[in-house]
Image (cartoon, rainbow over all chains, first blue to last red; front, top):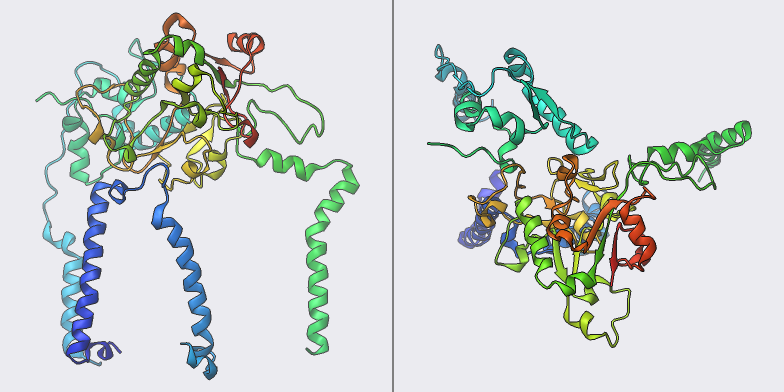
Length: 85
Length: 125
Length: 283
């Protein structure tokens, strides 16, 4: 099944490399934060939860909503939802 | 088996890597650690044999008693009064973390998180 | 839906209600008291009521609190009269407990500090203040509330009310979620955003007290470690003979602090929030 992801033209690989650099930057930043501490994020006593926790709660809702939209088409084969998935 | 040419050598290498600790040091147990005994006092809270097996539980017990129950009563040892404290009791006699705690802990590769917070006694070089 | 499914749902709903309500109904009928409520009150985290007050067992009766409840009275006028004293208190506290000092105010850790009148007492009007209050700051610290919101918020009970009424921190159990910081209405809690030893002078540490590690929340502990050795809190000791801070047992009607509270008019920080703080101010 993995073969499908390994087949593609040049544009495909360039796009993957582009996204991969963001992933690598994220990983590097995480390693730096792991070694130094959360102080690197610029959070303080007034902003103790910051983007991390506030957006966590918000994006969880967004993800749940996304699942609800995709579910009828793929799991229940309700083809009408094909327009939004 | 699909892709047999890759899977069987791969499995073999994986097993080799995962059991590395078992076959690499075979026959050699390393040097027995020799923690330095304190010169200041003769007796510890419990006999050495029990301390060796129980000091982790005893420290946890002290921690819960002092912090959560608030029982900061002193106990007597060899005529002196001590608090139930890692810094203020144990390290008063075992004055070097490197020569006492680390000898066994490095050998067994057990790193407790005591010293992240608790201040180790100043090492006299 | 077909009749059989409808019957089933009806029976299921009614039996659920009956099952949930039956123990309560039976208890009330048989014993005539409210034992479920009493049991629930006892399961409340140990020490939620200062000094072991059995609220539900004596339903409606006022009980005398037992056990200690430490509190403090801070006389702001005496601090205004002695300008450098508040800084001495802060320095003493931070020195005894190895509290780090950082240049960046975002990383600041403080157990006791000075703040303006408006921040200390936002419930009180600061309209047309007199000069003294306008120019001088108030010494504030953790209030060790009787009904602490931080203790209720903590998911691991790393912060808890101990038997002496002190809201204590167990740094071994703290996971650093900073929920208590969000819950505290007084901003008394500080998080270790980086290794605190970066902000400490390693030659000037108090070797009898540990520091904390990166990733835990810390705050004033009413010097519980010093109280255990029979000493007064470090800040109280730094005020010397001026009696600008009085520390004692609020549940002991003969203690010095109760005398001061009887004689002088005191205010508290944000009393309308219902946290029942243990720190009183004479302004």
